[in-house]
Image (cartoon, rainbow, N blue to C red; front, top):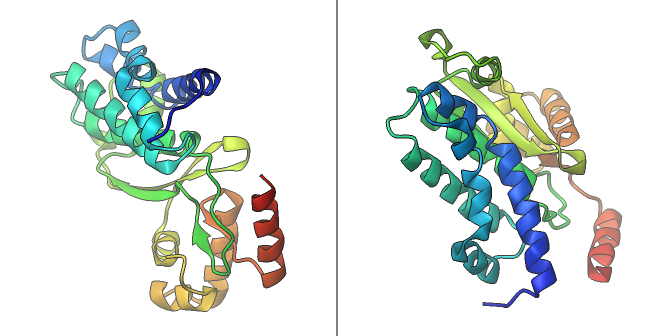
Length: 234
């Protein structure tokens, strides 16, 4: 347990308020389709930072940590799900899980430690949805209610890109296998063998995923030494 100074607490509130509002921006549009006032729902997630529960989270978790983002994201999902009853559509829970995944990317600023194997980004994750989420989001943005034609199994990869940009990629089978086989312990060759993908294609996929922040490339001994020295200076 630790006590955060007032200035740090104010900065944390502003940061998480902004990230909650940005990540959970589609659920108010969806709630409006179900008859719930959009203005009410869009203020709900950001108000979580003005509660004693948020103060308690900051005493238990470091600002910018994945743990804090996960716990705050869970609270937002539970609260929104409770307020929108009945749900505006059968896709409602998938939408909230999509927004939570986006929030994890935006709100997790901690950097992974230097490592000599390819590793996943701190907050990177792959998820399976029962609905075509990219098209469903586009439908909500057009103020249209999603139809059953969007009920389609979709696999998405979420990652934190450069400058905190949230990156979402629809994954094919090979990309999904390579991402799942990257467990922070395997070399590129071992990842290829575990995924059942050729070493060349595996290397290309890892390079592409590194570009969106989903994978952190392996470091050489010299790179690890420099990275560790830089971390110790902070």
